[in-house]
Structure formats: C-alpha cells, structure tokens
Length: 266
Image (cartoon, helix red, strand yellow):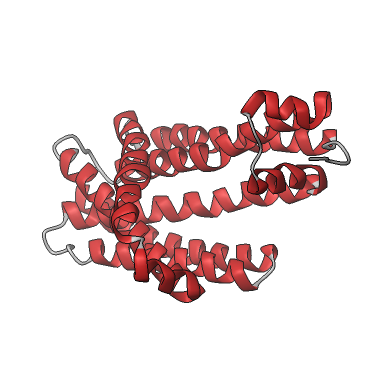
C-alpha cells in the first residue's frame, strides 16, 4: 500500500484545537450554570455517566439484538428507514437514561438549574467520546504518517484494512477548515442535549408533566433523522444549518419550560 503526501500542519493544529474544544465546551457550561443557576456538580457528573451507559452501552446491545437479517437489509436499502430506526433508538435509550437519572436524583434536586448541569454532562460525555477521542486519534495518526509514512502506521496499529486505508488517506486531503464543522456540530448538539434534559426534568418533577418524556423521545428522534437524512443529500453547511434551526427551536421550548419550573420552585 502506498500513500502520497503528508498531513498538513495546519490540519493537525485545528484537529488538536477542536479536540480541546470538545472538553472545554461542557466544562465551561458547567461552570456557567453552577454560578448563574445554582445547578450542582453531582448532576453534571451524573450526565457524564449516564450517556455512555445508555447510549454506548445499552443502546449498542439493542442494536446487536435488532440489527440483523431481513430487518438489517431493509434498513440498509433505505436511508429514510435507517434514519428513522437510528433516531428512535437514540431517542428511546438516551431519554430513558435521562428519566432514570432524574428519578434517582429527584431527592437531591434544588431546581431546574440541575437539569442544565445534567445536560452539560450528558452532552459533554457525548462531545468528548465522539469528537474529542476522534480528534486525538486523528492527531496521533497524522503525526505518525508525517514521521514514518504507512510503515509507521502499521507498526502502531497493525495491518491496515481497506476501510482503514481510506480513512488514513482522507487525513492527507481534508482541509483544515473542514474540521471546524465538528466543533460547530457539537455546539448545536449540546444545545439539544441541554434542552431535552430540561423537558425530561419537567416530566419527572411535575405530576401533570408526564407528556414531556415521550415528547423528548420524539423530538430527539426527529433531530437525529434530520441529521442522517440531510447528511446523505445535502452539503455539510446546509445540514448544519438545519440542525442549528432544530437546536434554536428546542432551546426556545426548553426556556419556557425552565422558567415555569423556576417559578414553581420560587
């Protein structure tokens, strides 16, 4: 196998900065929410634990049970079915995780600021595990490519598959600015995660607010369906614009619910 060209130093720098941003964003929000709303750190940490447990643990097991045979073939043959399946699975598992977290933390909560803290932790774990770790891996591979080429990469990770070769080759041709879209996408995702946390918090703390839980599942699914379907047909800027619009709409809805919860506590 041969590979022409090295990874630009500007691309490596941007990858590193985006990786740092994936951690700085949730930590900065946690500090802001703690100071401005009185949200407590334990809910931030709870969110950091619940996301990998439900989204990357239990949901992954659900995919292993459901994603096979004729059903798998049907999903792979239609981007819309695939998007709907993925969106519903993510919505069900992540929102159930939120519901469990707020049920467990109900005795500790002192107000809706805890929902914001939880959302920063839930979205922060997602940010670090999906974006941060990817950027760390990319930086390591890029430096290895520049220092010793493919032989050095094979020494680091072992035999390179065809898919792995395509991913490695893309590092040498991807413009540095393109990685900034990853940071932008994490901002919109963080807004969505915080907004959904407020809705599920209201479902748990209000006797008459149960409907916010199924609403959160459906809204989560709708956002993910948009991400997958738009990503298949539209350029990155258009896809991110649609997701930003979703984030803004959910933020406005969550703000109204948050203020209602705040007035209820006062």
